Length: 576
Image 1 (cartoon, rainbow, N blue to C red):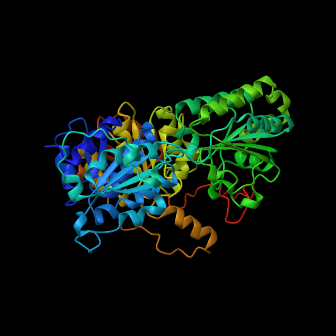
Image 2 (cartoon, rainbow, N blue to C red):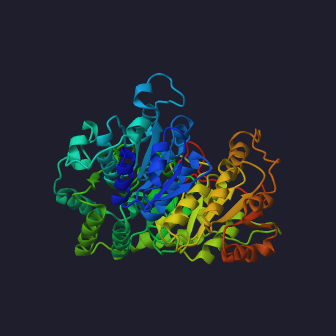
Image 3 (cartoon, rainbow, N blue to C red):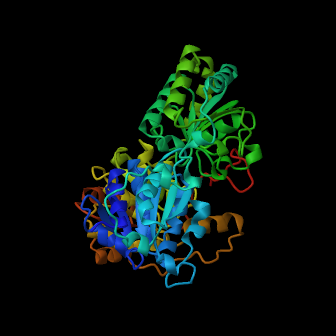
């Protein structure tokens, strides 16, 4: 007996899916029944639906494939929303399946019925409510196409129970487009904007290079989303022009963080060298970034002397926040790797290299050296930035690091070595506490040949600590570095600096013994309290054969520096 659910799962296989994250329930039960008959799909049973969405997100970031998750109707579906929003704001390709009550019951306030399509409309590329069983397979194929193409993102399929359970005959010879809803017909930007030759735009960009004396490359997460060829092309452009570069939080790893031309991350917690360069440059070539407020600081004072060339897959981002002199819309007809390669060839043909702006390059290098981070923190306690710097050196850029949100997230960005953007998985746009552990599970399944480390905080880990059980269930050798300062560190820091030290609801003095909690889940665990033991403890963590957690006690007074305060420009940094 072949049901619509069987057809859907086979369509997953045809789309290259091998792993699904989910949690069963009543309305999704026909899909779980069909799953027994599709051994090509590995289902990962999480312990909370939010964990399913975030694990699918981590899997997609680590592999470059579409992440897939599913849950039942009602609370199962609503528990996915945070993960869907996280993927939406960071442009992560994901297909989400939610069970729904049977079609005759829809609109009756039936048990576990919610309008998940309506709830998620602002945070998906598209939603499908499937009412006809014979349309489900084609809907799945359209969903994957939409999730991948253009600016990637999540797509929702809401699947009523009776539709999933419907018995179908032999596959009909029906075109995919016939069953694709009208609003989903344009599968890529070309449907909205006819493809055209970019010669004029690229010539205009090269003319700005001709005139520039202080050019700067601004590298964003869209480069990683465009694939390894785009990363390689961007690196070649940097090498060819010899221009200095800065990176966004999600752009870290496009250039290895020890690259001589990389000045570091820009923005609120960026390096002083990067922020000073942005404020002084006269040409900003922005590739795959969206001028996010955490990167720009006070927008009307951002890069005040610069003319801007902006390359992006989403035409809505071009000129949205910062006036742009040259807009280059990269798309399927003109992919990012090709556009960047053409820029590289143009700069080489015109000999637009650092020989023309050696004074500027020298000044940027001086800033990098002058403001280099020191790791000789005084005292016997563990210093968070030094610990993570040591961990990054030990991984040598070959591991995958996921993190949660807060002070430790910024320390990971600032102090660890990132050799490729798919090895630094962080919740950028939504800032989701609880992201790190599920994302590490997804990454461990997607990249089993790499060491996967989750860096978390004592506030964040409690958001999805139940997923320790998932890591144990599937024998995933996830390594957790848990920085415990007994407070919600980033909130405490802001209350200290900007709210007159009026500390409100930030103390976590009732934290459990996290090492004991980890052992209760089956993890190996160890505690670290002394600076002299940092390297030995990290070596134990990395060498352990299986899931392990290192519980690290740090001083709650350790803050993240530098910091651009609210309503300030990026060169007005507080340095601690």
